[in-house]
Amino acid sequence: MDPHLLRTYVTVARLASFSEAARELGYTQSAVSQHIAALEQDLGGPLLTRRPVAPTAAGERLLEHAGPLLLRLDAARADILRMAAAPQHGLTLVTTATALGPAVLGALPPAGVTLRVLTRAEIPAAVATGTADLGLVDGLAAPSDPLRLPDVAPLTARGVAEEPVSVLLPAGHPLAGRPGLRLGDLRDARWLDAPDAGLPLAQLRAATAGGGAFRPALRYEGTDVRTLTTLTAAGHGLTLLPRSAATAVPGTAAVPLTAPRLVHRTELLHGGSPGGAAAEVVRRLANGR
Image 1: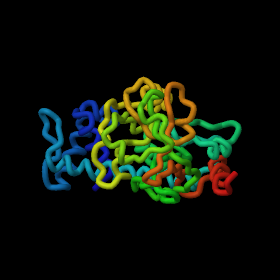
Image 2: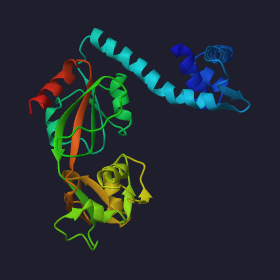
Image 3: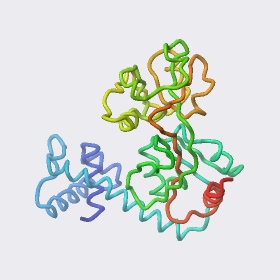
Image 4: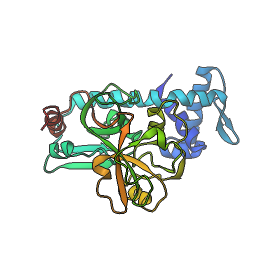
């Protein structure tokens, strides 16, 4: 398939409009129509209904393939350009809200850093396509086990930090005075679902035998950890955080998670062979300083 035609199709399907897709892509509307017709002819059937503009069953299936295909093409282009380009003096780092630990902060250069907080799903794609030089992702894992990351491109992942995790509860919660808590005993508690600020509930379910429960009492769709801890202090639900983020939060109690044996793991992502400031950060973290 011609990737130009595929990209046009994805844009039309996303915007549900030939004219809006033409405006976004910088084509005429007739050119967009010709792209779609050529792709449909190549694949032997209709991919879009016209009124309204919507994917057919075959078009829906193509969309499932198109995202990863186009991302890999963008990643390949970025990788080659990165090899050919002169090293950049600045550094763009994308990170989750809870991945910036002392080791990483100590490895950053004193100037020239652009830091962006993104969702866990966005970070591998940002590094793969060259939008960022380096990425930091985090999550729950057994000690020394790597994180499970999406296969968006040939990225290198390096473990840079591990720390214990704590259950954050309101200060007046009946379990706040416990020396430790078992995750399995908290399945039916009131939880906050904050997949991009705390540790996702899906990871909690995966970490307990049989999964189940961990139903959210409130969903927070943001990346600010302070907002998340404020919600916990107000009694809207429990959350799981790395120990450093859960300690000394006003109005809350942080109780260590004792079972299962899990840690908060942070990994550094980069593509190819980083240059300039990015290479120095990788070197420092690899050497533990």
